[in-house]
Image (cartoon, rainbow, N blue to C red; front, side, top):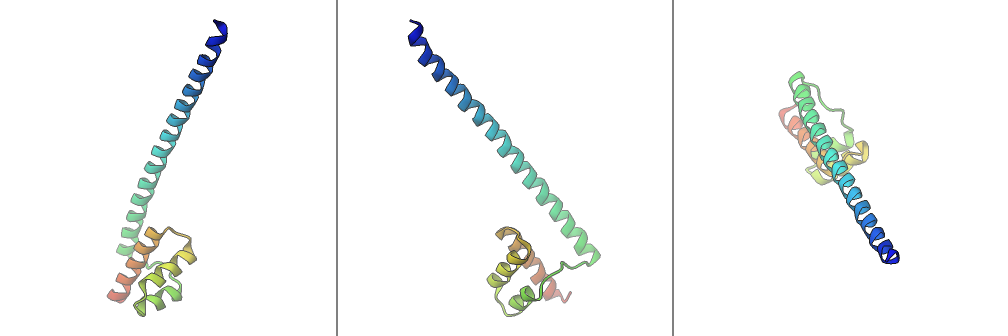
Length: 105
C-alpha cells in the first residue's frame, strides 16, 4: 500500500508546484502591467509640462527630414533607431513632433 501512495504524493507535489509557479507568474505579470501604466501616466504628465513650458523634444534632423517629406513611417523608424523606444512610443513621439512642426515650434 505504501508503494501506491508514492505516485500520488509525487503527483500532488507536482500539482502544488505548478500552482505555485502559476500564482507567482500571475503576480509578476500584474505588477508589470501596473508599472507600465504608471510609467505611461508619468510620460503623459511630462509631455504636458514640456508642452506648457515650450520645451521641444530633442530630435535628430533625419526624423524632421522624413516628416517634412511626408514619410511618417520612415520618421518613426528613424526615431526608434535613435531612441530605442517601442513602436507605439515612437509613433506617439513622432506625432507630437509633427504637431509641433505644423504649429511652427
